[in-house]
Image (cartoon, rainbow, N blue to C red; front, side):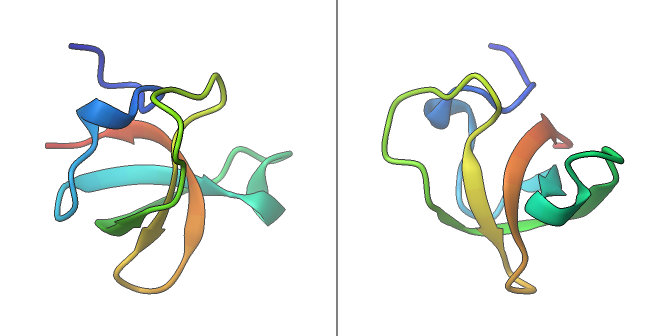
Length: 66
């Protein structure tokens, strides 16, 4: 299983991930947190599955930490 966040089945609610938020896409700044909701409906996305963290931040998963 890959852990780069491009497949929906690799991400579960409650898992720890690093995301890049829309306003940080140019800098590539990552935000770490716990997945609250999975927002992407398709099975995979080339830029990462979009999720909402428990803090309310939204972004695309770049890596799965646990």
